[in-house]
Amino acid sequence: MIRTVRRMSDLPRPGVVERLSSTPSETEIDAWHAVVTAAHRHDMPAGVPGPGRVETAGQLRVPAARSRIVRLAVPAPGGDGDGYAGVALIRLFEDDVNRRTAWIGRLAVRPDQRRRGVGSLLWHEIRAVLERERRDSVSLELEIGSVGEQFAKERGFECGLQLVLYVQRIADEDGGEAGDEAGDEIGAPELPDGYRFVEWTGVVPAANAALFAGVRNAMADAPMGELDQQPMRWDAESITAAQRGFVERGGHLFTVTVAAPDGTYAALTEVGVRSPGDLRAQQYETAVAPAHRGLGLGRAVKLRMVQLLRAQETPVREICTHVADDNGPMRAVNKLLGYRPERSVGIFQAKVK
Image 1: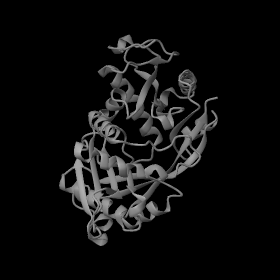
Image 2 (image 1 turned 90 degrees about the vertical axis):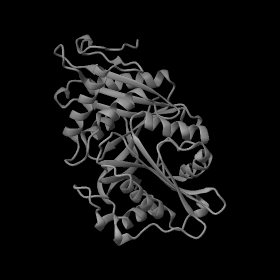
Image 3 (image 1 turned 60 degrees about the vertical axis):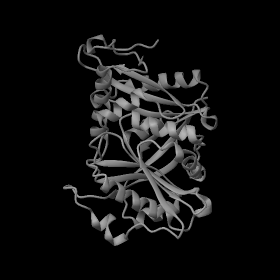
Image 4 (image 1 turned 180 degrees about the horizontal axis):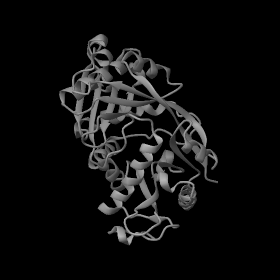
């Protein structure tokens, strides 16, 4: 039964898992955000920025592309004003390639509520949802060596893809350019003759959507390890919906592509700022179409992105990106651009049946 909570005093008794509606109230969002920020401060290394409230509200209210979202929460014990003890967000893919799998976008328990069965209660309900939805597997991202990894392994999860999170510093604390990592030392972006940059902020323009979808599909050969989840296939409609969804969640999106001499798009990079005022941006995709590899286009679009972020006068000071251990070409590009490894993460998968 779906229930929408409007006042903190309306929160039901602990020991049960509540399924929130698709339009959670401000009170629910505040309670959810309190859990994820407390967990982040407790679990993550110092200096790793936590989620902003705009990001939290957007994730709860606006589903990702070609997906449905299930929102679960366990109320905290104690009475009025105590909020949630734990929360979980499940993404149920609806594209043809991934219809039999799912993604846990959030599974967090308040530090002062741990070792009380809250995580197990949420996991039990997650499994029930996945079984009802006829999903064969589910994945989530975890820090290597964290308590989350231990929790997941005890419930049958195995690491299917190991990644390293890299960070590129693009500005100093006062907003000045960080030249030693992303400035004059590595030069300005250069393109081969006949190639040109095409870029935009926000949602892809209609005239660019089909071309953008075409080069985005170059990600189809990205390493996916032992995971059931596979890269989505894109067309003009779905790629537009994906970028529109990010903007509707309150984020700022920046896209740089390279047009080839024949007019098709040869490369792309996409960076998002999930909450206004965030100092760290997330690089979501960088891809080069197979016919155009070896020309330095991956490096060029990333350099042009740094220029774009500076020109827009955003508060962004650094860009982070995930790279698979076996993605040698992208690791080489990032090294040239001054990215530094911050921490190791893994995509862990469990079979549902």
